[in-house]
Image 1 (cartoon, rainbow, N blue to C red):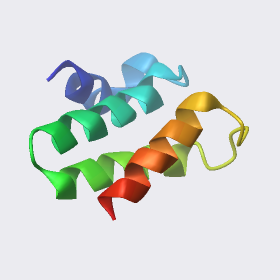
Image 2 (cartoon, rainbow, N blue to C red):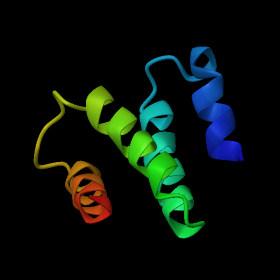
Image 3 (tube, helix red, strand yellow):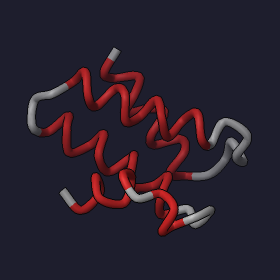
Length: 71
């Protein structure tokens, strides 16, 4: 619920990375709750936001791996 609040109120976080990272956590939460469709969407949102990020970032690699397992 808290991660969804962050995503829903993106004006509060502005360009702070917490807004994007909340999407990873949402993806994880949806996956654990048995909702792969919503999980995929959350991961896709994150990966879109961070498409130009340093490809060696640990959280980016981890999110990509977790997303691939949902496919």
